Length: 175
Image 1 (cartoon, rainbow, N blue to C red):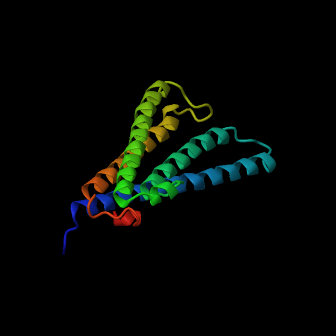
Image 2 (tube, rainbow, N blue to C red):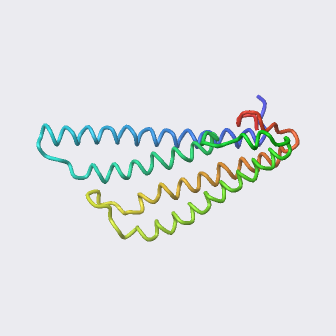
Image 3 (cartoon, rainbow, N blue to C red):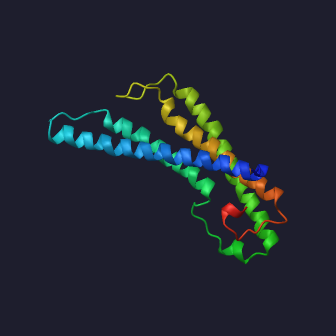
């Protein structure tokens, strides 16, 4: 059995984390749909509106959006305008893509730090109707920041380590 190079093992590990983000976001989406089904059933069939559904929906949407965004950073599937980058020489393209990865990683670091501050503020405040700390909502921001920092930072490091052999026009899997 051949061992994978360290960079390939890192890529596999990050893919597992991305898949976990997608699974959690998918489960949150299913729970969101089910709770709205319960809301409609309770309101129109039982004549009793469950009041907690709105707060749970807001919480779940935070996790769906932020975990989905982090997975998008890993896949490099976010919206981008590449026409000017693609017109540059290959070396300039490589440098620009590394700078962009570092900027995105920096943004993730800011999200992580700001989210941590929000979490410490919100620990004593309870979400209405759910009676759980407000910090559970801001945990989505904090975890997204950590994941964006990890995904973009590692991609930048891998691109730097493979600068000579790396083709910027290849798919992300070929990095």
